Image (cartoon, rainbow, N blue to C red):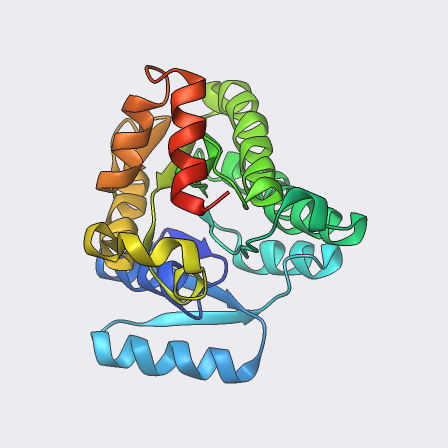
Length: 252
């Protein structure tokens, strides 16, 4: 696999870092994007502690010119669109600019990187795209309206792309984790009661790497007890019952 490069966005911490490490362990050339030199140093230290090699490139994924340069330099066989952010707010408290930021960072940026990477994948005879979504890309919860709206949009576009590039040896997989231990979830108060059933970032990273390595990658990977429970229960539970349970849980 050392002749195949996998680019992971948002590789400085949490799932991004765990994925960059796991990808390197699987034998790929692992390259991670970070936004600062300080974060690149953090990746270097983590890689050394794990006994692997990870290259880093500076990139703000909202920078279109920067995206084009990085993709042309790295020419990835595999692309893991992981970089994201989460805000916990009522829909009415999110102004237009913040809503646009969700769409820019969580939808337009990963699809831009994907679009730019496709010609290189075709030239190489194939490639793998893994979109890190969320169980919120499938079912909705209070206080995460714009985050999950963006994830659901990402999944919709990715589903179309999967069919469009399947004949070219390029696969598109969506990973839908539930709540897992990370710096992001540590800041979300509503997730703290779920700490006992949280997955680790490393376990989710293992699934991402599985999607890269599988002979026939699945379209979707649901990861974590809570994610599997929601995926199974959401279509079966009456909407009024589910809404009432979530309102009680969130104190609404």
